[in-house]
Amino acid sequence: MQGISGLRHMIGSILAVALAPSPAVAMDEALLPRNLSPWGMFMGADIVVKTVMIGLACASLVTWTVWLAKTIELRRKSVLALRRTRALEGNLKLTEAAEQTGDVHDPVAQLIQSCAREAELSGGILDDGLQERVALRLERVEAAMSRQIARGTGVLATIGATAPFVGLFGTVWGIMNSFIGISESHTTSLAVVAPGIAEALLATALGLVAAIPAVVIYNHLVRGIANYRALLGDASAQLMLLVSRQRDHRDFRLARAAE
Image (cartoon, rainbow, N blue to C red; front, side, top):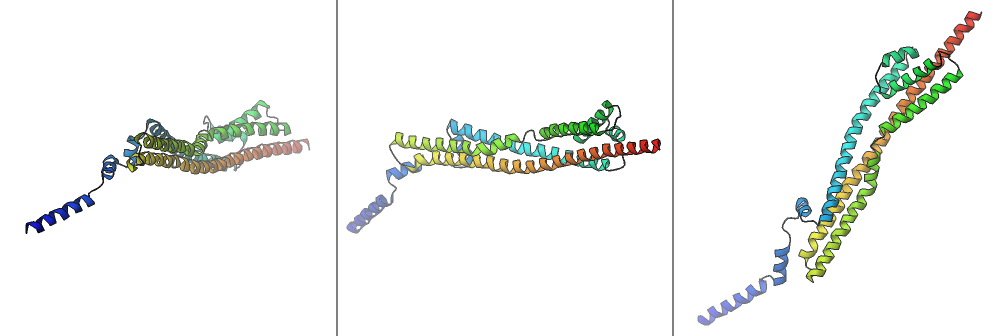
């Protein structure tokens, strides 16, 4: 019985030794980071990788802020421009249109006021020269309003073009730190390689998260700005038609008076 008991004890010891993890595996499990969540990877990242991640997060915040501000601005100005352009299609005179705009400074109102100002400076002489001067004024006002409405969109193009490369820089830096850790520890243990690789991939992901919406939003805003410029062009065309009608009516009255 004692022999059988001793044999069982020996077999149990052999199985325990065979199934027990090796020291290297136990060390890997001890060194392997327990928190591989995005926040945990950010907190464990190198200062350079942290700086890259913070920069990309700020760029993403700027992207969505510009989208919200420009969407509201475009919608408000487009509705107002459409309403004023439709008002110009009626049987209005230039002086009446200028009086309706009053002291407001929206783009179409500035077009109307600029046109009325040129007619006033011309002494009420409605000729081809006035139409050319009015067209020049309208063109300059349109260009100024187009630059104003497009202000802030350039940063989206910059973010869309540079964010992937900034994220790639964080990736390269994280992988480089992983190789440095391998060199210093003289081991290819997963516990040494995994954190740096995870940080590198997180930096790449943040670069894409910042770049893709920036490109999509930039293209969306460019289309909206193009539609807004078309509305300003329609308003300018209506003003030119208004000046032309007034000139033709005056010539008609002068011709009837000469008869």
